[in-house]
Length: 143
Image (cartoon, rainbow, N blue to C red; front, side):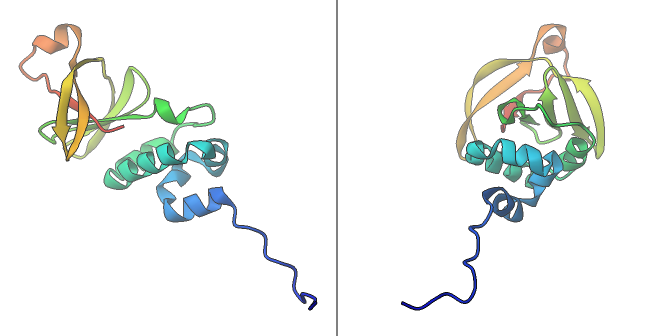
């Protein structure tokens, strides 16, 4: 038997590997990613949406994420593409319209299922009095 001259390399850290492939998740913090590593598929879905909407990364960086569960992160896109919203703790959300991010109360109710971007997704509409305004949009839930 031959002796090894160098100690074997330790196995790669799964959290570091995930962050290398999906750097958008660093907005939540390394400890948060490590804590929720068992929900890897959900984290990857979140990262894909963050990659599509980079402004969301900046919004997340400005908020403490220590107790946030990955399944409470919700993203809605207006069907006409005019607005995208990130909800970290409903009903508050951060929406971008015409390049400006603002905090809004996003009070939505389920409307129906619909094919959007080749997937069946949930469609929501504003709840209450907002539903009767002419500016009321329908939102597709991405996350």
